[in-house]
Length: 279
Image (cartoon, rainbow, N blue to C red; front, side, top):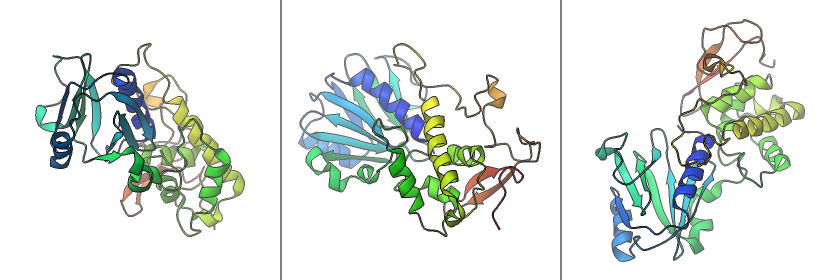
């Protein structure tokens, strides 16, 4: 599943390409979106802004209409110049919006819905997001308080992934943040100290902000870089534990372990030496 930094970069790119531009073409594989277009045409509207909220994306259109999408496991947004060959087959298209300058295509996205701006706050699931690590108004103290209020018997890894507690962290950052703060991802939230919790909040914010720096002056590009948490230049050394089961810990040399976690059975990685499980 794309993490918060991926959604943030996609929204930023879409905003730079589309904001202030008139939509000249709209298509969708979703009948409910097509019905909205037939009743109140999307073409002719102006894209006012595109922004990320955790793992959700909101595209605000003139006339008080908002397109809300979620990439889930395999979705993505691509930007092309008119006539440019797509990197994915036409059959993967779920939503297409075109202006005179760009074509924005949502590929394999499973969740897409139009909302009236006046109803967005109470109806859209994107508005359940309260503390987004990449939001300009992110409140570190509030994120700490929300994690501190998580059920005592919930595991650390599950709490970090719970988007209604804190938003933007995915499976990679879950493992990387816990490792950086020497917290076992299967430890119960009730056993985590305030110091450890503050470390995880600050580290998640730092890691994610470091991975949304501009990769080109224009910003109208698809992001092809590698997510990094170690700060090391070598791409092979870019992550501390994620995806490294059986390999030596970069700190102590102990073999990295992995196990599925939570209802979604997402694989978690950790160092048993650096991240001791509390008694």
